[in-house]
Structure formats: C-alpha cells, structure tokens
Length: 257
Image (cartoon, rainbow, N blue to C red; front, side):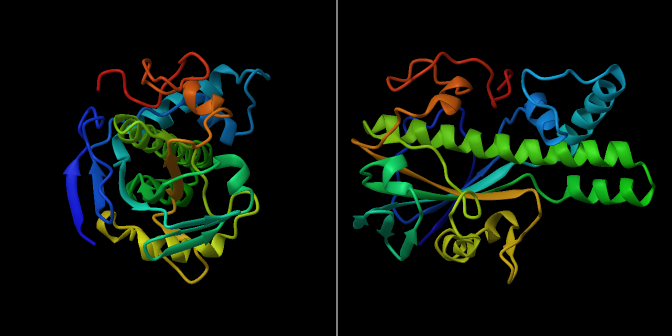
C-alpha cells in the first residue's frame, strides 16, 4: 500500500482507479450549501423561512467557516474478490452492510474514503462557547456539519469521474453508523484506508477527531445501480454524464474552481 499525496486536479476523468494506493486529496474547491446548514438548524427545505437575524448570523458563520475549513480526503480503491448478499471482500477489507445488495447491485470495485475539514473550525466553536457567544457558536457548528457533508458529496463526484473514464457506474455513498450499518466498522475502514495522512484519528468508541470528519464507501462496476441516484445527480457538476437521472441544479463545487 502506497500513500500518494497530491492537490486535487480540476478534472479526474483521466485518472485511473489505482488499486491499493491511498491517495490524498487536498485544496478541494468546496462550496458550502446554505440550505444544508439551515437543515442542521432545524429548517426544512420548502418549510418556513428563517428571519433576517438568522440569515445575518448564517452569513457571518459561512464567512468564518470558509476561512477556517481545510477540506481534504484520503481515498483507496480495491477490486472486489467476493460479493455475496450484503457482504463484500476486497483486498484486506471485509464488510457486511445491511441493504447493500439492494442499493448497489453487482459491483467490481469498492472505494473507501476518509474526509475532513480539519480542526480549526471546531476549535473556533469552542472559543465562542467559552465566550458565551452561543448563537454564532451553534451556527458555526452547523456550518461545519454542512461543510463535511458537502465535502463527502464532492469526493463522491470525483469518484464518479474516475469510474466514468473506465465505463463504470459509481454508486451512492454509505457510511458506518448510518441506517443499520454498525458504527464499529469504522475500525475496518480505518485499517484499510487510514486517516493519518490528513490528521484524522479514531478512538475506542469509533468517534473521529477532528469531529467534522466522515468516512464512507462507494462501489463501482458496469452493472452497479444508479437508477435511484436522484439527490446526487441534482447537484453534480458533470452535466454530460451518461448516467444522469435528473437535471443538475445546485453544486458542491465552488463556481470559480
């Protein structure tokens, strides 16, 4: 296993799916979705709109969040040697994810990802709590949560680019601790795709540091299921993708990148 660091190129469609290599992605041109931040504040899409004071607080937190976050990720691909029901085996990775066969169909490759926006934002949140600036602290924390979700979606898009270059469909992402997947499988993912190159560690309770970090896996293959992939398609920037299910709307990529 090799660790290959590089800054994120603007287009990865010419990049191969290198088996066994841990790739570090830095300098990712991430855009934070304000609606996602408001969702963490309890506002639902299509529901009641926040008032001017909340929107002003959101703008301040977004500006501070953009200054503090350092989006980066590590990715490792592997060829699937066995897929039986919801169980996958690829290199030294062995996982059983409830519902995976139904969601993904037949795949030939799997990628594990660890991503983070770094520790600076949550350190600033702690400072704001200590100073009793609670509204900004809570909003900035939601910005961090929204940012790492957008980062995971962004990296999923990059993996789609890599798969499309080889004529492979790439699935939606799934994470330990979501749905029925046991969070204890974080240990298996970290053993396969370590977070150390980007400063992410895992404790005995399977919580990550920095807190604004996520792990996930995606699958790829000629027969992988993408027919239920509406939310991902709606904000993906690859407008010429042959597998697009709905028109592109918003994006998690900065428009200037």
